[in-house]
Length: 422
Image (cartoon, rainbow, N blue to C red):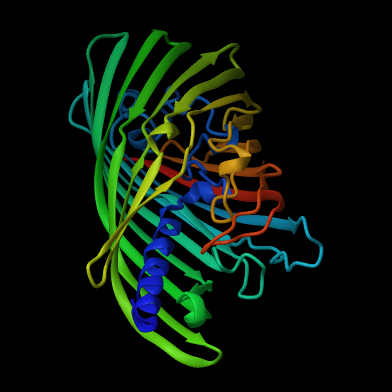
């Protein structure tokens, strides 16, 4: 094999190996915030059982049975992440604050066909993250910047079986876009032909995928109820382009693009929630859930250049639980105060954690308020501080080398939602 062919083979591998970074979603920064809704102020606690407003169509379709008449809701979350990486080697560039500010909008509608049958429709952005280390940081081989955005549309239906039991379900339609930039350096050639190449890659991919949601709600009486919602696993296929330029000692080596594909599995999840009206003024809400991240074991990346390449990348994630508690206190006839706390387990161990997915345990602390402006309009406000953990990563060598070090990650988010009944 001659030197030019060796160079081409190495560059093709570089393009294909860049693909797995596109698989990062909002969990890359630990930011899976509930869409703007009235239960943001309880850290999402009780969302599968509360049934307050049009947002019920997404939280748990079965709880639409609690929604009176026709209702429409608008919401938005503004979240600012602070991601600080401290390289174990103090001589290395740590990349500064790689966090960003994201806006997560939502829209929901519930239409009552009858007292027992409700139709719903929701459009929201359940995933949305950005991470930017800059081009000078030591781990630029692995990632300099990355962003993922998902827009989801979900039509739903619910049916009240009897005074205690309601059932619901819906179809999830996700449109996902992902972008990634990295600046790897690698060796091409062998023996006397061995040289170091410097490259810049810009990856862009998108795709549409489908899943489903099913839920149930059991009302013990007017003050106590439980709900369960299951969201299916979704097999995702993203297709896009990888633009790459490379040089050796300043001499251009390549300036081209390649069609890339990657597939991974968005894990299934199940959530059980409770809502309990303890007194005339006080309510207690809770969640216990599990996300089956263990299905996210391998990402397969394909590069449609030359003879093509298929490379499996091991992720080795594990299932993780979520726990949340929250409360309502009715201060006045129109004003209800909220507070909540949630804890999400990390799905990845230190040895498998990477710079594009610096995820750890997450603790959320929230305060909120719901204000009934009139018979038709409810306004909800929420504020959240999220401790995204102190994730540690080990040094990764090879083509996508990144340094060892520790993260200090956090986020602050605010939520506003308006629900209108007509």
